[in-house]
Amino acid sequence: MPVLPEEVVAALAGELPDEHDGWFVDGTCGAGGHTRSLLEAAPGVRVLALDQDPDALDLARTNLAVFGDRVRLRRARLSQLARTIRKERIGRPLGVLFDLGVCSLHLDRPERGFSFLADGPLDMRMDPDRPRTAADIVNTWDESDLADLFYFEGGESGARRIARAIVEARRRTPFQRTGGLAEIVSRATGRAGGRTHPATRTFQALRRAVNEEGDELLGGLAAADHWLADGGRLAVISFHSGEDRAVKHFLQRGGREERWDILTRKPLTASRTEVRGNRRARSALLRAAERLRGRPHQSKGGGES
Ligand SMILES: C[S@@+](CC[C@H](N)C(=O)[O-])C[C@H]1O[C@@H](n2cnc3c(N)ncnc32)[C@H](O)[C@@H]1O
Image (cartoon, rainbow, N blue to C red; front, side, top):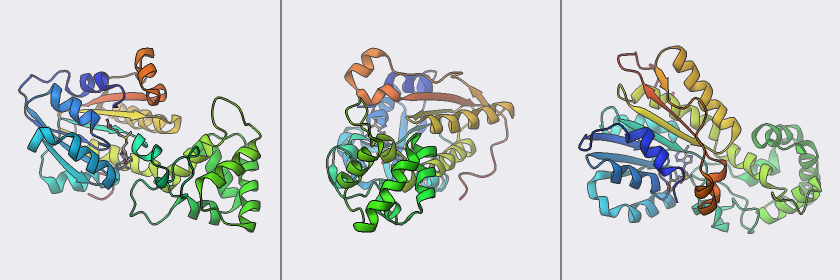
């Protein structure tokens, strides 16, 4: 279920005349929920829908089949967005959307290794071709690097204790499963029984490192800055304060340079009604901006133009 669907459509397509043609880019199409909303709201447009996860693309292909050639699905990472837009020859898109992070496809399938609730291999790769898994990180990184990761990427206040417990445990047996890691982390924090599972932050930090989510986002933002049409819109949904801060700073800098008109001074959040029907929406933060007309486009499109 897409989060903030009406807000995303309003931000990207709200001011387009009904039959306006052109392309949107959904950089993180997942099951295709937002792509569907955009195709329904703007009957003249087409969507280039990308995801790094082949399972997500399979699902989107089924879910969006009814739209025929109005949707083009391609496997790509955000850091490859500039190259993909160029290769697909869609010209300058009218709108670009990133709905960051994982989807239920990842969390609900223990074999993908994202879940601390259901045991699975300690993997966490959204793109299965990435060389490094979560097990590689927990079994090989220094204690201090692990502690920094949990603290800075997960906001985990018990980061040092958790890192120490991991390093001690892996001397006996290297970690292979999410269940084993969740247990050691829970014991190290001594926080069992709260509303949030004690391994939530540690798992989030590991997932961000495995998928290089910070760098991926910056690559995607640079590509949007380079490629969006004059007057085109960017919408980004984040679920992590560091991620939201990166988007805010990127837009503020572009605002000062008069390349972006920021449409959301504060991030938009989901209504109580939406959160009741979709728990994932509770931490969603949406920022949107418009590419100003006639301003030079940033020269680099995602570091690999
Ligand atoms: C939250 S889901 C998107 C849900 C989608 N908006 C919908 O309505 O169904 C995020 C998706 O983005 C993909 N993703 C995350 N980071 C990515 C990246 N750097 N490059 C490409 N895809 C990415 C994930 O594989 C996942 O399928």
